[in-house]
Image (cartoon, rainbow, N blue to C red; front, side):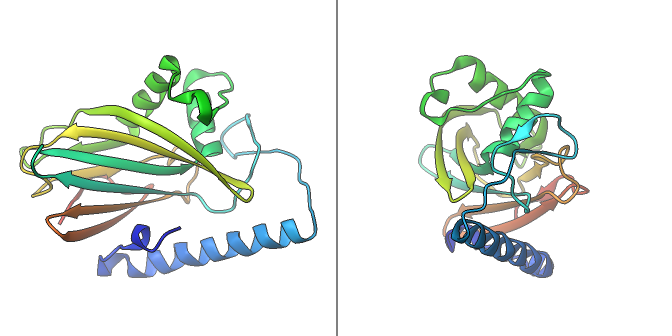
Length: 207
């Protein structure tokens, strides 16, 4: 994970960030060791889902980056998640197994609508007037990192006034994992804002 993505500056989150970083270190060492001895493991299931996860991982985290475009008064949002976590979340909602194919997902209207419906239920951004920002689909990209496949989801929305007094709620995958951690980085007028969400958290102010 790039250093920019870890630009979380909130002092109150310092200890929790260290804990997440430690989990990532454990995950990285696990992947390296598994590949070194050519270990092959069967698919596992998440605690709350009957659907197999092809590349199980030990940490449950997402990273969301927000950047405000002053001239257009738009917010660009990039959400990075583990592919199998997104598959499990969508499968629970659809009540059938969902398999993501990154190469074709951006052309699959049903898949796009499913992802946007999930985001509307788990991720919300409000402007300074308290009105929800309506998000629209921009695209999706996938990349394999060792045994942990990642997905980048791109959305955007009109947000006059930028992040001033804006609020955000991020419960992505909290219905799947009690230890889910969602990191949010926001950039506005050269200022970096960092927040961290756990399953117990609700709306937080971007400041």
